[in-house]
Image 1 (tube, helix red, strand yellow):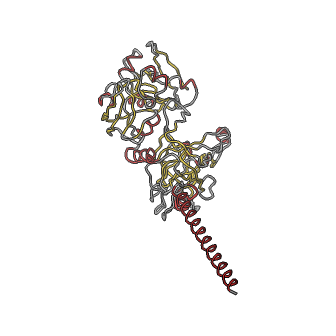
Image 2 (tube, rainbow, N blue to C red):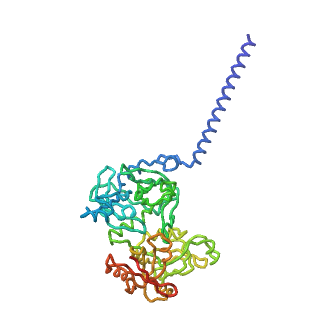
Image 3 (cartoon, rainbow, N blue to C red):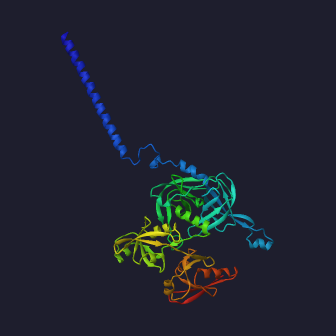
Length: 466
């Protein structure tokens, strides 16, 4: 009996020890896994917080979409044809009578009283512009002003209490930031696509040598979305969707938008001055590259190399010299020419900017007052001109003339004329762009236009456009 009690006691003790050990092991394992879990969360790319995250798959676009869809409109470009007075009049108009749709796009309401931004190419040449809101109400719009270079147009409808999208600061956007592209391409309801900021200050250089500066995004943008909104996660306008690069004409992964700071400045200029006030430094230059770095023994591989400075310009007065490398303007990093032109596109004449340069390996900061860039588009010949400097006139061995600053068409013949001096229009001597305007204004619409060019050897040659 005693032996049995002893065996029973040993068995019970062994069971207690076994259960105790098992419990200890389980508790230790739990603490180990709990510790590992905390460590894993602390290294996660998705922070665990009580606030709404905008990273990774936790991004919530619903609020931004709700804020913006009713502020994006459908824009119709309509050609209006007068009724023919005779059979000959009918055939001279190609058989067209009444109205004909020329193209469509999108637009962004930017004020409750009906001001709308769209692309200039959407409304260009329209006899009538129809705007349809997201609630299917239709209005006839008036063109307030345009900027063909930036492809921005401001139109207005007679309406009140409209939902609108407030401007954001496009200088603050970051690569990889979530964005929404909002458009109304099919006159149904506004559509929303999501993507990220793929690049900033992208220069497509599609039409001429003028540097461009676009926001690039992989949010789906198709032709009908032109003039629509690019907004951030807060529903603020950071760009006006403008272009795509595609061999088929449809979206293939790249879309481009005019930065909101530039679009806002254009709109404000049109409303206040009736035209766009463009401020310039007064330099000509190139992106720093390996050839320039080696040739001029530069200490930097990025920036804008100053090849020439216009006499009397803000740059000259501020102390910028040929051979300087521009690295920064007002805390905006300048890596290439499109960074420079993109930022200056949001500035006006007489604005003062702080320019950080590198000269002989040393950094300097200079205050520069921007000058007014005056141009005039001679649409009849497809060229834009600006006032020539004394250096320009000296280079072309002439005492008068204006300089061709841009080709309005993309053909090689027009491109080759950039920089050439025009000395006469219809046999009238030209000294500045005011003379150009007068020469064009006094010309009859049916009268041909003769333009006299001068080459670098100082020889003049006249061409006639009919």
